[in-house]
Length: 485
Ligand code: NAP
Image 1: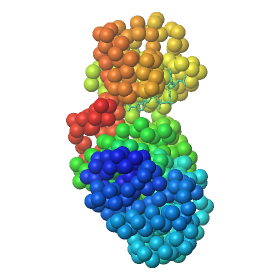
Image 2: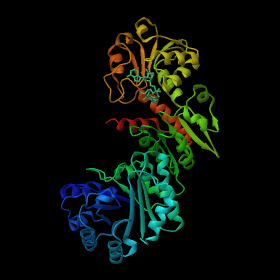
Image 3: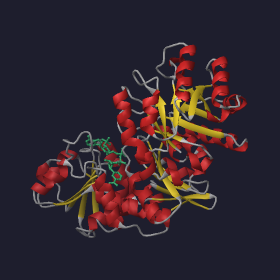
Image 4: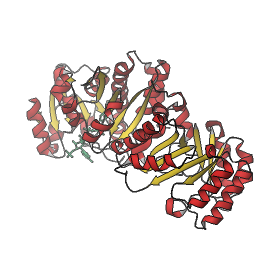
């Protein structure tokens, strides 16, 4: 059940949120503490869906500043007006709680507990307190700073499942986004979504349209295989818009989520065991190697893995970035026997330089921090050139594998434009799809290759590994383009 939180702040805004979100919602939550001069009757009439009424006090993270007596009146009025459920806090006045429970009946009470500072060490005791209350539905929401913390939501749902108790458990914040998507796999009764317009009620809430159309979270079952992308930051990642649609086309019972991960070790211990496979992005592509049971030879030689799949009890990793970039370049120009000038000395530069050399190119490395270029050149047995010497260097293909030009610093360019005349220029940066480097190169009659080409190639290879099928390239391109409009 997708419950859209209606947050106001005025009645006009609240009604607009209801109208724009109704087709994606199974139910609404009216946050009467956030709506100025709320009229429960009007909201309920406009919703024409089951409603949860909440009047969250300041001491539980809400905005209601009145007495418990006033709160009780507001909530009992909402009940009389037809609210299907009331949300009460575990720490609300016991008298108010028992009176409203008697009035509504236990089955219509969602007893909730919120923690905004940290995940409790003992989730079991939080669950036990909620369970003992006798409320029909128990809800636990807590702030998660890392995906591993969010695992507590699954543990909470597992406890409730054993007791056949309806439960909601959500981790707040970006790191908890996946708990809002996969809740059904672990027996969760409902998820909360942001309205299509106006503010979310809680950090990390995903709009209901996205839960339904991108994640198809209403189709998730205990058997659904969970995939995702692991990185930090992760908000900008486009993979969810591609892999979920490819799963749908492949008729695969699977979902792909974003996992914001700072502590990779904790992620591997607490979250990875729940996953069937995952993409790895900055900054974990090198760290992941030591956690894998087996590694493809190319990824091992590069020292970076961007794709992990479960094979039996063990995890296997490979690198789809390196062939993804070279396939994009070689669509325009074969690299064998040619000179490739690589700008950058990070993970992408290492992967692309390795593969270019393997395919017969002579590779030279230049980087803002020269020592790093020297180290990479030494590792891969390549030449390194100082940035100041670039105007004198002779080359055929230029590769930008730095972050220069990437959103938000779109006016940056990693090399003097004068060296681009008539060359082949590939920019690994894909956001924006046309960087300043590519625009300058085109003006100078260079052949240009966008970073989106590499992105699509590496994602297609991942999709083959996740689904066992060849993905539709044109569809993938369209899905990615949609993300830049
Ligand atoms: P990384 O390991 O953090 O390396 C970053 C590189 O960029 C370093 O060489 C760094 O130089 C350089 N750099 C950063 N800011 C710069 C600036 N303002 N001017 C000049 N150089 C700068 O990152 P990565 O994983 O290699 O990724 C590099 C780029 O490739 C990113 O833009 C990423 O989005 C892109 N990428 C694209 C795809 C794709 O599918 N298209 C896949 C992977 C990566 P210093 O050593 O001096 O710090």
